[in-house]
Length: 522
Image (tube, rainbow, N blue to C red; front, side, top):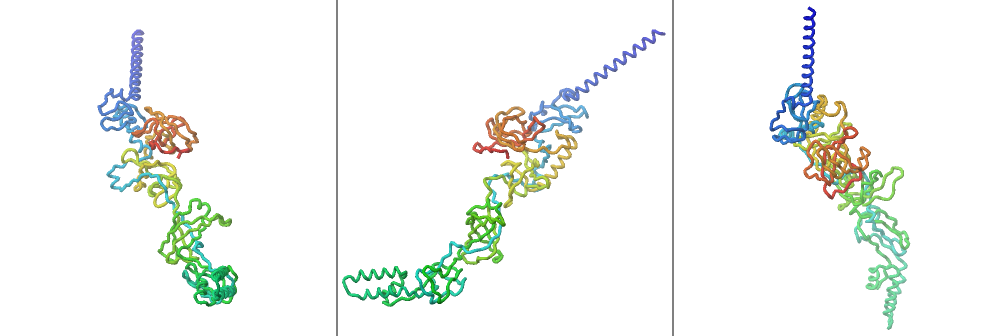
């Protein structure tokens, strides 16, 4: 009886050992399946499936980044096979799907056409930035002339009676009685009547004294031809215009050199405008302007900046700017108010995109950039500058040659935001689900080496990270490298920081050989 009980106990212990060993073997096998899904599937692979990541699929030509289970997308595998979770085939994640992972969205070309999505190229060039001001019309002082007398006399007759009377060039404006002329004329006439061998020399001397007395040539000729004394001198206008100042009346005695009146022409006028000193630096002499006045609605006057006067108004902190406008019909009159539109040119070439491509969200300014693969768009944060003529200056965020959406971008941005939100909820993004988007940094440098997973660059300072110039490796971008990229190429690049020691390239652009280097990052 006792021996039978011992046999039963031994059988129980042996059975327990077998169960424990079997459970251990099953668990080990299951662990191997989770670590290596290829082993779990017996290592079977089709001809269209790459053997590992970073190899192109022969059927589609697309590069595979990793494999994943659609039901558990946060777990990634480096080889194809069957999922250890749901017992289903793993799905490849291709490199050209990265744009959608980073907040982008894919749109079929037919759908793009149906939605009317248009794109434009980021261009580099001068941006004409208009600036508006107001001013007042004034006489062009360069066209001003004066009517004066070189001899003392009395105004016997005044042919211009009031200021602002119009006069023509050569028109008689006043007659003066000049008593000093009488003695010189009488001497000349007496000498000419004298008989003798030296009369000719005396006549020439008498004529010279009339010239010295200030007689015009026409008065001297009248004395010679008529033989009569010429007591009066007629003064004429040397230019046409209006009498802006009248300083004499009939019967007044005037001294030699006195100004009788001032005549201003109206073929061109000045506009005096006060420009804030903060804006004056962008206005250059010779810049073109357009002017409009309420007195002549619908008519546009075009002229140029004559100069900025070297004086600042201490009260208003403005600088007087002088604009010259042609006025062939004399319709612009002094005192008129006129609105001015300056055409200023930005310093050097600037990156610019159509203004309609820019999306203002309140805290962010973004544009939808066309990805490397056809039909993909991704939002990019940008810093904008001046805006003019339907274009906006881009100071940071874009590179020349990139293409951006200029219509339908609000729909694309909404779809990209929704895609990103769903991807974060499902864990399909390598960063933390609730972490904010990583900032994008920009720089320029020279390619020192191109390795399997890295590109080594000697770059200049990176202002956004407060880096100095250095040589360092960057993780290769998810998209393909430019075809013309070689060691020694000068490139502009964008990258993100993943932790303290990993920096991943987003975009590389090979710059022309003659592109001057920048001292600072964009």
